[in-house]
Amino acid sequence: MKFFISNTSNHFLQTHFNISLDDDASQIILWLNEYSICTYERYRVVVLRFYLWLKYQRLTLKTINREHLLAYIDFIQNPDKRWVGKRRRFVHPDWRPFRKPLTGNAIKHNIQIIRQLFAYLHNTSYLDFNHCKRRFNIPSSPYNPLTFDHYLTRQELNLIGNFIGNLRDNTHSRYFFKIRSRWIFQVMLFTGCRRSEISNATMDDFILIKNKLWLRVNGKGSKYGIVPIPTHLELRLNNYRAIYRLPRIRERTQPEYNIPLVIKSHSEQRYTSVTHGYIWHVVKLIGNGLAEKIPDEVLSSRMRRISPHWLRHTCATMQINAGIDIRVVQANLRHASIQTTMLYLHLDADYRHHETISKFGQNSVN
Image (cartoon, rainbow, N blue to C red; front, side, top):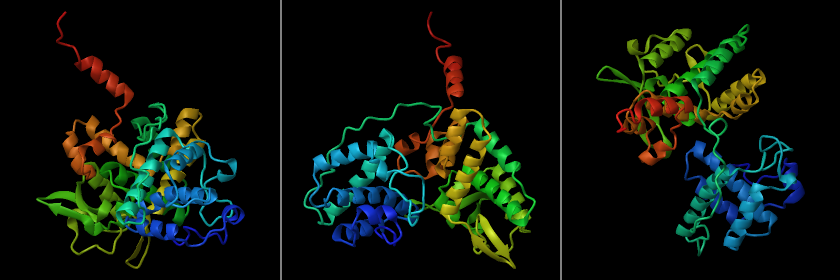
């Protein structure tokens, strides 16, 4: 959070803003600190854009009204070209708030986060009135299952698996990067865990209950849950452990709280873990690398867009396609509401078509 309003090395902020720590920024920081690190970083991006726009318009959280919020929605649909640039770290001199105009769905997500901020500030009496309380009419982006569904098909999963399998491994670092990348995709795909849950977990979090293997995770809001480990993932886990000369998971004889679930480096029984940012980096690196080798423009575009959360969506979809009850899927993803689980389900178009024509209306009256 130390970079929330720092403009010491950022050309964009130095050029367009004269920013210092004010009451608005202090309140936003307090609100962000209510969240876990992964949510914290995602929300920071959204509120930083909003905060900078307020400063650009010479507004504050206390002077803004509904008309201003509507103007902000118009702005993020078509931001000034000076606000748009390539993805950069915040401290990079060429950092910009936007990579491109936001889609309807992205705008809805941004406004939902800003709505949470306003509700918090109103509840803490920083704001006398919540101008975000009323709903905003934001058109949804057109639905296109080939480009907008955040899940991976079997074809795409096979392409990713083959790409990782063909990575060069002729040096120590390349070999372990290859091993690590494959394991990241496997464990996220077959558990549906969030990247923060994976980066924070250790081998000690694999537990046996009535001889059944589970993974204990610390999820959103620091809520613990357990995720069942399928047999095929247990086999892959044991293969991964064998590389580090660890016994099979069911043959452990001592605690392994010092061994990360995903190992970044190791020496003399000392292990370091990957961060959730590293997991994001690996998934994007694999996706972009694969995109370079795919001639199909639509498929190449999808590979460039994949993120770790796509694997969570894919896990839910695969479980439903396998015939698992949606209430079980809800429990596996640890969703409080089944409506949230429904948002993660993306039935493959071919599968949906086959299921409909083969099972619907077979016994209908002529």
